[in-house]
Length: 140
Image (cartoon, rainbow, N blue to C red):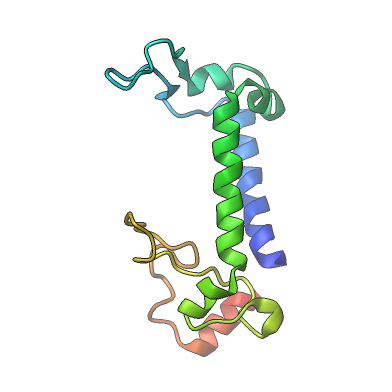
């Protein structure tokens, strides 16, 4: 759990630094979509959220549905990473039962829509590594 949460903390720190320096996506967070019953929806850009202040103020400026979507997404990722069934589909065990620390199960063709990258090795850097080298990389 320390490896996974350490990775999340590092990504969160980078995000905090970017937000604190006013870096944001150039498109809209929400906007009316023609024909989708969203005519009364206010347009909110990522720049509007960034202008709210620091990262805590930006969280407060997010619409409630955006916060719910973030929490459900993170909750799903946490559930998928801890589920023994998902790990067993990859031939792995949970890390407290002798599995690899830091391993995250693949998404692959297990969902109704394609998920192109897995979170363990999204760009396939370790596919040609020996098992000994992979073990050393996990420890480092």
